[in-house]
Image (cartoon, rainbow, N blue to C red):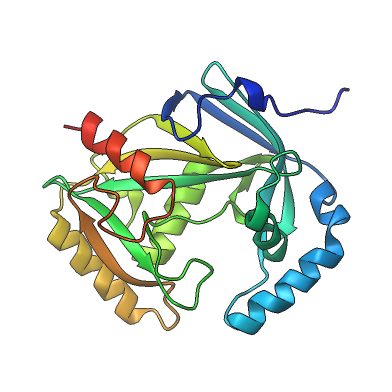
Length: 245
């Protein structure tokens, strides 16, 4: 069987939101080729990372080897790698070597705010603002395929204490890509107001002995200058505020 290769030249334009009907991200056995090729650099970079931030943890996550986007379907082959592998990759984003695919649940309150979080200073994204989410990891594998919805539900519950199953409405999948990162997102409408949701998240943070987030925020405008956003947030906010109301 021929090895899957990415069809990057056929992908939609960068930072353009497009609809997704299905995500088929299959888990391959064995180490990622990028990990094998860059082990020395990964170890060297990791030593620098933990020297600057000793709180980092070299857990396991998913990093794709090849991804195809065609006719609304995202399909690919992914490997389990140490987090340190991703940290080296994201410095230069060699898309011919690896691609990062992750899921982002966009929580929308009854009064029209997008609920986001600000990451703590001890995390890999200190001070960055985005919707509560995290990389796919081995817990999200179901029958050899990455479970995007399962990942979103798990990450939101861990970080905010909110259950996505409590949402009153849910959109279909959409996605965008930027420098080798593919963000797959869907919005979840809650009957609670932004103030109520933020209060619940604040209570969860207070009870967590090692919270990853500093605070929850209500975003009511797609203005990219409001916060220190992750790059994918601005086009997603533009899409959400344009299409939900």
